Picture 1 (spheres, rainbow, N blue to C red):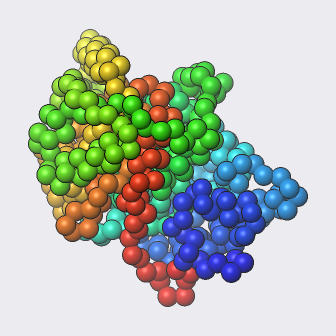
Picture 2 (cartoon, rainbow, N blue to C red):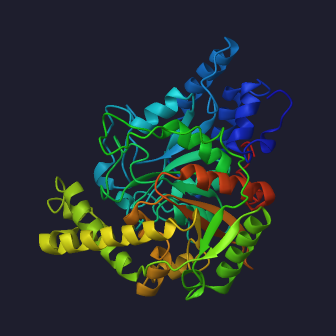
Picture 3 (spheres, rainbow, N blue to C red):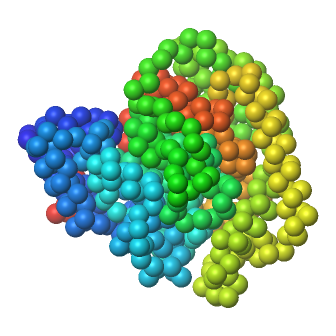
Length: 474
């Protein structure tokens, strides 16, 4: 690789490795081979459902050939990434964490896959997730291992996406979020993630959990990398009429605008009541960094969210029941208990009750819009507790469910965009993260604030220490 060692590469940011490929200091083929070796050397992390070695190497060779002819497809040209196993890839499986779908083969690419290929990205493989993108990992798919602490939860449902990025097994990953499935794994694994505004990214060819709640998410190492990825996949799509017709900004090119005068909203009730001290202190530290960079902190009062979190389950249940009507309840025996319970709930909710839930959702969205007219972004925790242990998650109860959904479900219900970034560590060296939430379609503002925060801090550059199996590249 022209003098660079493999162990200098796998934890680089996407932007950095893209520059190396573009300048031909390294080859996409050599980099892809090194990452594939690393994936196999760390296969005990279980982040991949399928490694697409042959097609990845072919894509990498093509990327190098194009560069040799002077043709570049942009900032993703030749960069190895991976995708959550809910995105259709022509000729490949899309199991969505379900044994019932293990033999399914996609006949065409999802829109976001087609756009990533068009941008020159190399797709390394399909990543592990929970059953049906809901709550629990189920055989034959094992839960990925948190690379920071194997006894800790790795998140749900985009667990494989976050573990792969955190462990240096991909430079970015497609994810999704219906309730917290991009934000929670990003926080648990110490990486950077974005849930765009609902409708900002096409959902064509993406496995459906709950149509009006599903968002395509992205997980990477930095806000800069998210800007590159989002710029490649966002935009209108004739195959998905719910994808908005708004023009897509050049998110990457617009990074760097000073934060002078930017207003950050903070609600002390949301950020401190019932929030573990380590989490609230890490958030306070992150806000202080942004203040030092010129931002102004404004105290706001956010609408109460407990009701909207409970309403999320009802809406999700009905829409999931519709998504699964071809196989549930007809093949209920092949479903796990958590997804079964959700779908059964969906079948029990009458139309009048669903409309009541949808009306309350609209009211909450309007209340949140009103608050966001006063400020540019909101600063919030991602979870009210540090990353829980696997043992604690095996005894999940209402208290833990609320702790995990308190700061995520409200914003899938309202559709507002959010960016998650690491901002500290607990005493046992597990990551702590915070999130910024913005107005609808204000991803540029969120990414720019994230860019400045990460330019002033190094939390996103701290990586877990991992050893590959003997005989593999490190």
